[in-house]
Image (cartoon, rainbow, N blue to C red; front, top):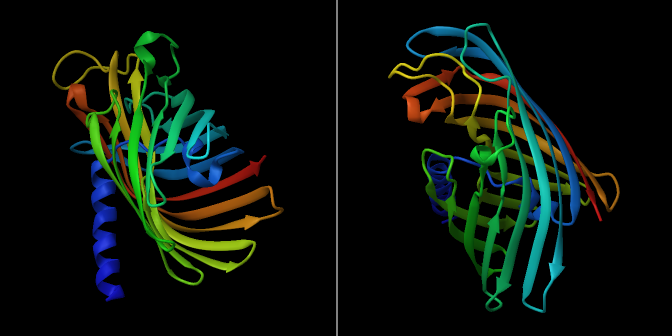
Length: 296
């Protein structure tokens, strides 16, 4: 019975990963509420192609976020915060990619308990998303997500919702989530941009294996060269995505400080200038991530 349930949940996870384009800001990951978080990630050098080899590219990401919740009553909570994330791209000469893609955002959300079993939440991330050449109105947008959670039991929670991102090729996408504690120290989780299995080795240490998505949708201002359908690769948008398969560990140094480290394989990398019909596909490469979260 458990094997059938696990197979069904795994199928849902792949569906969620296939449909969704942009991960929600780390500010609103449940474990980061009321905290300040800093992370660094590096996905290694790998070939990039479009009908032929164009050269190699690697990506380094630096992110920071903070958030806190404010009780508006017994059943309603307001979450506020901010985040900044920058992808620094090191590409061989001739590859039409900007030096960086990033976002600087303010984040706000509300969570409401309709009952002990039903919870609704909505979050918005207004801010600037682009190549960081200009912080103007063209680079400003408001991605948002709305979800409903159903607490079937203390060990099983279902979530369903919708994500909206005006800069993405897929402007509206479904979101599916499941949190299933199927054994004393084991949890299976589907929650974009990550799904996987976590084992609580002891009170301060958790080990996990996961499939995750790194990336976002950005406004391109810089002129990167001619587009295959005519025009040029500027004043347009790019969907950047990496699918990662890896394992990691989270260690609570104190009650308020948590360190996380993860490593694995970046299985797929894409840069899709969808308005210009120009998509770059990357080969697999290793990746590593380290992060620290400080609760307050």
